[in-house]
Amino acid sequence: MRNKGFTLIELMIVVAIIAIIAAIAIPNLLGARKAANEAAAISNLRTISTACEQYRTSVVPPVYPASLAALTIAGGASTNYIDGVLALGQKSGYDYVLGVGAAAGTTYVCTASPHSTSDGNRAFFLDESGVIRQVAGMGPATVAAAPIQ
Image (cartoon, rainbow, N blue to C red; front, side, top):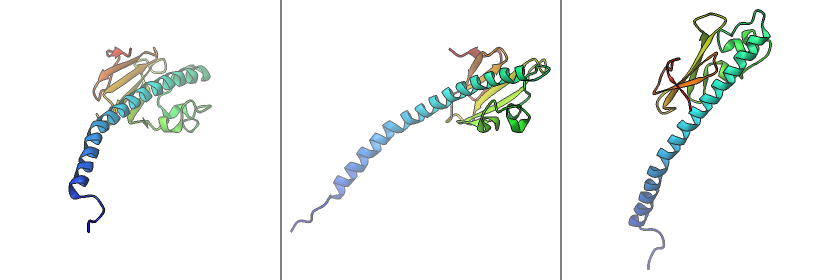
């Protein structure tokens, strides 16, 4: 009488096939996650740039905000220019810092750096010119970095 079912060899072959497929798929998924985080960081910097200009035109005398929190009602703004998560300085695997530039009130600088190399391969920089600049690695990026293409 023969028992119906799988043998140990058949089960080991199935497990080996699943392991091979996972070994191929996981690095591609991690690369896609990094690319998505970097694209989100660039998009968030564009949002911050627009929010800073809107803030500047809404206050008298016209000055740029001193921090991300200042771009929300909780930080003293007349309206929420950015969402509350971004105002906390961390979103999509990146840390964001907004501060005053060399000429307080008339300039600003903003950096976006990945939490770790598993979150992104580039760090970014933005100032009142609106040009987003990048540097490979954890950063921080500076005004001397190359602009994104």
